[in-house]
Length: 323
Image 1 (cartoon, helix red, strand yellow):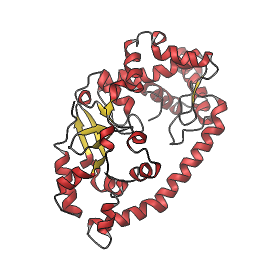
Image 2 (tube, one colour; image 1 turned 90 degrees about the horizontal axis):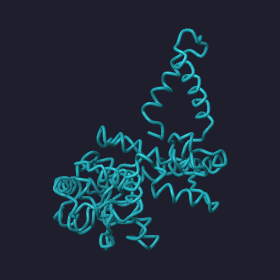
Image 3 (cartoon, helix red, strand yellow; image 1 turned 60 degrees about the vertical axis):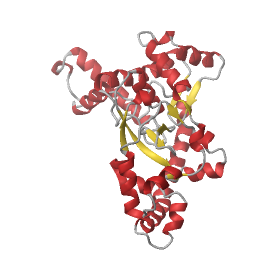
Image 4 (cartoon, helix red, strand yellow; image 1 turned 90 degrees about the vertical axis):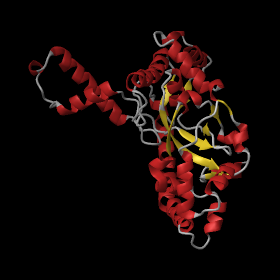
């Protein structure tokens, strides 16, 4: 789901259903005007490039000067995804199948860390855990945990992570995402009084407004800053009313299992985790992106292939964050 909320999506669907030549007398004046306004919005949405991952961009935050940067990013993303889908993923799946059935090269495949995309496709929902978000306070940063670029690139494709990456953890609540969400929620009745608004306005005054061609955002006016903050508040109000919706947001809440079997947060889904903590939700779904090699060895106890994965999925059910 992109930046459009439920109400906007419903209204746009209504606009699409109402015939374009409908007469004003067949609708109330207010509805007729509203539908015409939103038909203009629909027309403008068709002209706005999508984000690199294909998400809808909020029209109030988009600026035409982002167009070409967004299109270039979209092309690069599409090429990379196509290469991975046609070349990398089939190769990973063949290697994973060899390990799964303990065929030739199985030992080398495990020593390389197992391809995480293949493990994820095989285990599916068995990698999902329900955790108390307020207990999930330890986070690791991939660049900090894997400072050597070659090791970092390898980890991005592995399910089993070796080394001392879990010793670089830090308190998630001191990070800028948690501070941003908690500050915004404190000032939800008047976002213009928030620290976030002040900092974004300072960037405008310094001639360096916040921009992200990956998200299609240019915050170069006070109204755009307020619209940007309202997007986050909209997510939070929805979460407060309906609970955590895993379908909102492009990334799941990714976690890793450290050498002691504890759940630690990874970079994906940090804003939504902060929202769940600020709103004091009792449970959120997270998915296991990687496990420590020492935990893997201890849990699998020498088993390989399907037997090893059965032991891992059983052990995951007992994994919890540690305060």
